[in-house]
Amino acid sequence: MTSVDTRLQHRFFSYIAALIFLVVAACSTSERDEKLPIFGHRMVEGSDTIYHTIADFQFVDQDSNIVTQDTFRDKIYVADFFFTSCRTICPIMKTQMLRVYDSIKSDPDVLLLSHTIDPEYDTVGLLHDYANRLGVESNKWHFVTGNQEDIFNIAQTSYFATALADDTEPDGFIHSGAFLLVDKDRRIRGKYDGTKDDDVDRLLRDIATLKREYAN
Amino acid sequence: MPIKSIGLPLLLTVALLATACSGGNSDRTANSSPKFLQYYRQGEQLYIQHCSNCHQRDGSGLRQIYPPLDTSDYMRNNRDEVICLIRFGVEAPLVVNGIEFVQPMPGIPSLTDLEIAQIVTYIYNTWSHDEGIIEVKDVSEVLRACDDREVVGNKRKR
Image (cartoon, rainbow over all chains, first blue to last red; front, side, top):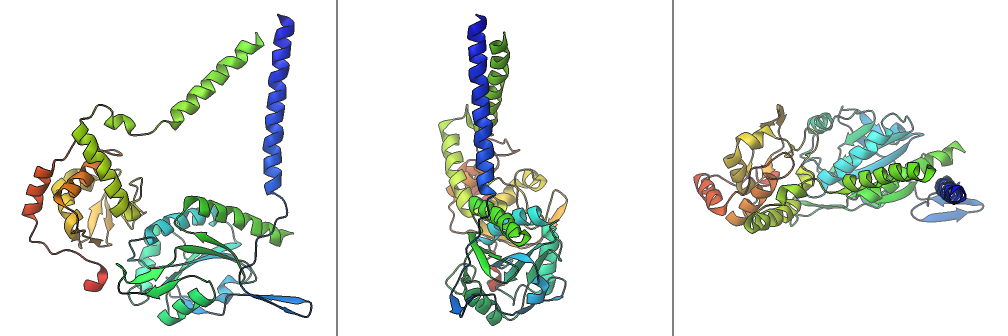
């Protein structure tokens, strides 16, 4: 009786030990020094590789502050394109971006940048109200408006995101629900479907990976 | 007896996990009539298709931008109005649970009376609501009383 008990006990503890080993192994592999890809065209000049970067820009945010590339100097940021009266994918995108906001709101290294693609309707006042109603801080999450052509242009040429006016669409625009992860060197390091829970989970993990890259 | 002392907590853990995973409102539809179930299931699909973008799949809304449906004094007190605004939309601000919501809600005039009955049956029997089936004949009567309204479209038509 005693020997059976001991044997079972032994088996139980080896099982627990194996489980602990597995969990530790699973965690440590994700902590490896992995690097995120760098998106876009690149050119090699001599020994230097020149990567695609976000072009200079100048927009106005919900507090009427001018927002430029300098606002994001030495910051990692997540960008997207939306408009407040959109009823298709934007509400889901904003629910997902709120998850990102909640996870980075006390992290001084990371900011959020949402561009309206309908600046005619989405005035500074309206964006101010929208951000207030979301309950987010404007120095953390900038909602910007500006010249529509400039916004469409930076969406397509800098962020590889689709944003177009189209009167056949129910809300008047075609746009992608992408979230773009931009590093401190203005390079795109990840593209995510901002309407999908698991893709936004991946974004949250990638932000942590990118931060480690700069910490090293 | 060490094995017994391991066995009991293990059993409890499994039992806990099992109850944690079982669905929230499946009991709501357990002893219901086939007609209710048909309304409810159809209504759920229509809700996902037409309403959940803004009001969210779980009815929680979006902060102070889109009002919640899961717990809503407005829904409780204005059932006829809810039926009308699904078809015709609403422009004026609505106060829900003491919070004023200003985003206009566009109407969906393409929905039939039956489809609206299915949607309201779904939303009025999910989350905190338990009002039973809302029949198409009652919905049609309510809709007749508001059919002189203009449909609220998207903002470009304003």
